[in-house]
Length: 437
Image (cartoon, rainbow, N blue to C red):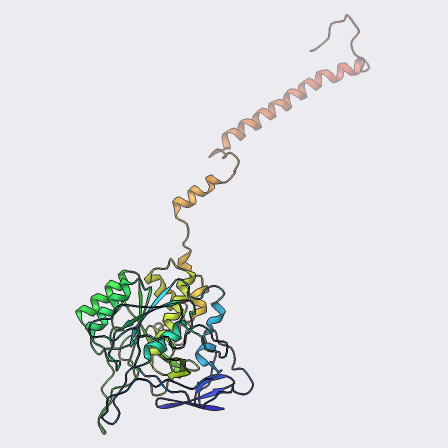
């Protein structure tokens, strides 16, 4: 058993799975049991953490994320929980563009080669091709990283295209106007799925309009239902009550919260102050960073959004004609139920299930034929001529004629038979007139 540290917690390698300490892996959407055997060997016993927002240390400005030198062959628990590989024979997200709005995406791992695009640099935002924080690259890996032969890790949709949109500065901080411009840029670039990796305490008219515009162009927007870290409070003071965050608070956006192994809420996770639509793995998840090297771990609702975005890409890759509304409904209708009444205030409609999102046949997708179609359909069949609407009169005539025929035959037999007997059943002699006929 090897321990893997992360922000504020410890993760362990059990049977080749990356799990938080003390966690139990229960059945999930596509889960298989924890494999038996010893843990996979790893050169180091810790994975460095990635956060949504860099903070200053000892009054010093935060530096960029240090490249990881830690590798592991472990299969992340989230991958065993969701089992996206069971849908890969049908879809791997090919032809679908997923926009990652955050600190930028740098493909130092090489697992996005040939599938990474970037939007233009936005005023006030960072270079989308660079990633000082590492958070955007981490999300992009969860969504679309290709499988590497020496590890069990892979993105949910390894053939999807990633569109990097920089909506933060070099610390991960954003603003409503900057995020609004990023959402607009993603919609204009044709992204079918927009994964927003940041949260804001308040929205704006411009942000609300950008959300409506992108959704109107057919994009599904996914955003965290809570920040990854609770706001810090002074010693002895009570934390503020949880409040909605944006853009998840907008009704057109899928609000996602994070889960720990076993489908439970992560211990110490930030309380959600608004609506929850879907849940997904978000505690001790593993992915790549912006530079070549090893892996990182992260925890929070922002990481859970990547699994929902990847599931959406898989569904669109198999069903490209889905509208934004149909796609959102499909993700919710096929979610792995985890609560009571739906939507559950903690879990929403449940944990996203990428396999069911691809393969399920929903009743409303096969509506009953209309009355006009039902009437016209028999005309195409090779059917015999239609019978009269009412056959009673013709049947009566037929019966009457049959009865008269029987009477006539009976009368004829009454004459013919006696005369035949009188002649000994001999035919009349030649030249003699026939007695009947």
